[in-house]
Image (tube, rainbow, N blue to C red; front, side):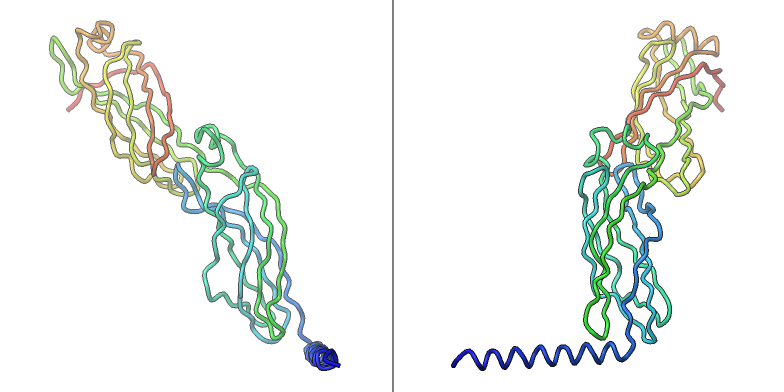
Length: 277
C-alpha cells in the first residue's frame, strides 16, 4: 500500500515533464548547432603558448541564448595539458552565431625533452573532446565535440653575426663588440628574454658573455644585441693575429633564456672586423 503514493508521484512528474517538453516542441524551439572554426596560438614565448580552439555556436531560434558551461580535455602530441575557460557572458544572438574560444595553456618542456627540437617542427598534433553548454528555455543544451588536427608551432628566431667592431686595441688585448642579429620569422611578436654565450675567434676560446637583454622582437622583424668581449692575446695568439689583420673566423655558442626556458644556438662565420667609433 505504501508503494502507491510513490507510483502516483512518479506518474505526475512524468506527465508534467512530458507536458513541458510538448509545450517546448510546440513553441518551435530548435537546438543550437556547433561547428569547428580554427586553431591558433597566442601568448607565445620560448617556454610555452596558449592554444586557442575556436568553435562557432549557431542559434536558429528567435530569442538570444547564452553560454552556460564548457567541459573538455585537450592534449598536444598525446600529452594532456591544462584546459582553460572562455570569458564569461558570451551571448548567441537570435538567428545568429557567436564564436567560443577554448584556451589551453601549453608548456613546451612538458611536451618534449628538448624545447629547441620541438619548436623546429612546423606543427604539432592536438586532440580535444568535451562539450559546450548553452542555456535554453528547456535547460542547458550540451553540444558535444571531438576534434583532432594540427596546430602551427612558433618558429625559433634566426641568429646571425654582424660585423664585429674593435673598440680598443693594445699590445696585450682588444675589446671586441660582436653584434648578434635575432630575426623573428613569426607573424607575431616574440619575447626573447636574455642571451649569453661563449665567443671563439680562429678556434680559440676568447671569452664568455653574461646575460644581455634581448627583449621583445616584433613580428617579421629583427633585433641586434651587442656582446662585449675582452680578448687577452696571451691566451689566444691566433685570435690576436686575426684581429690585427682585420679578418677572422668567429663563432658563438649561445643560449636564449625566457621565462624559465633555455634554448641553445650556434652561429659562425668568416667576418671582417671594423674599427669602432
